[in-house]
Amino acid sequence: MTSKPPILLLNGPNLNTLGVRQPEVYGTATLDDAVALATEAADELGWTIDARQTNHEGEMLEWIHAGRGTVAGIVINPGAWTHTSIALRDALSVPEVPVIEVHISNVHAREEFRRHSYVSGIAAGVIAGFGIRGYEFAVRHLVDLIAREPVK
Image (cartoon, rainbow, N blue to C red):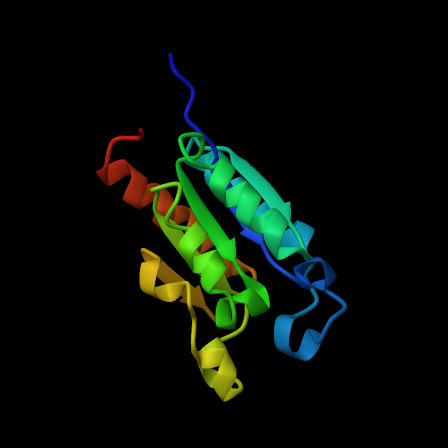
């Protein structure tokens, strides 16, 4: 039996500070808590998660490029790069797999600059405002999308 490629779970800048940075916006759960929810959902559905976080955009781009032919899909919380990085948007097309964009807060109810996403236009779905539960929802939706198309 061939094993399935992992789901790549990527987290951008400052997400390593979840639980301490602006708890009134992001809650008190940590990034480890969010990854645990995603991993539990993936395990339940027969998939694995390769979770990573970086504060360095170039490193994020390299991970995405390396996903070509090796991952089944990508769940990404791009953090502030959502609103600033055309390079991230371009990189997310390289692996040719479904991408789900996730945000802990409801970015559409926050500052005006947070309402624009360079990623949303190429994402198969966007989940925002559900706290860290959004990671679980993203994994479940991604697996549903993958099930509709054969894994490469």
